[in-house]
Structures are given as C-alpha cells and as structure tokens.
Image (cartoon, rainbow, N blue to C red):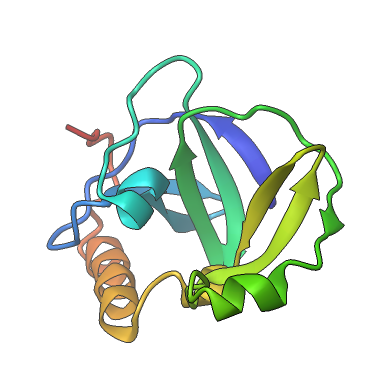
Length: 142
C-alpha cells in the first residue's frame, strides 16, 4: 500500500472492463482505478463518503483499488490455515496468504495475479492510448 485517498474524480478510459472505473494522476503517472468488489465478486462498490481508493504498487506502476470503507490499519499475523484451505480448493491465484485479525481471517491479495494477461493488456493499452491522445482532462466517472 502506498497511500489512501478520498474517492477522486476519475479520467475515463476507453474499452476497458466495467470494473475499471478510470484512472487518476499520481506522481506524474496515471494509475488505473479498479472497483475491487466488482472485480472479485461482480458487485459494484456503493459510492459513499466512506468509500476510499487505496493506491498500491502494481507492475512497476500504481494501481488504485476502490473499496467501500477502511475499518483500520493494523499488523496481522500469518495463520496456519494454508494447507487446510488449499485442500478445500478455496485458494485462488490472487490470494497470497491468510492472516489472522483477532477472531477473523483476512485475505492478503497478490496484485500480480489479480488480472489475467488479456485484462492487464486492456488496462495498460487504455492508459497508453489515453496518454498518447492527450486526453487526460477533467472527465469524470459516470
């Protein structure tokens, strides 16, 4: 995690999946913004005052994940549930590890595996196309 920001206005990107909300400018580069709930579960994040964007490291760039709310920031301990969860076939490629938070289990996501090659190419191509056209302006998400 690099930074948490308020839900900003997004620059619309052409021809991207519906979970890609657009992009924001961050440190002189464009960071794609992903509706994290939509990407993982097919349900859109409700736009509310508690929704935030977490800027993360992704493919030598930044990636913004729109989330419903931040409950807190804390250090977590690794669990010993990995073997059991793998046996139950619950682990997906993007799941990095399972962490313990009091009586709950929290999933750590490996962003390198969040998108397949085609999805990653679509996002990167849209960013490049928008930048080359000079269309980074005050367009906002719908």
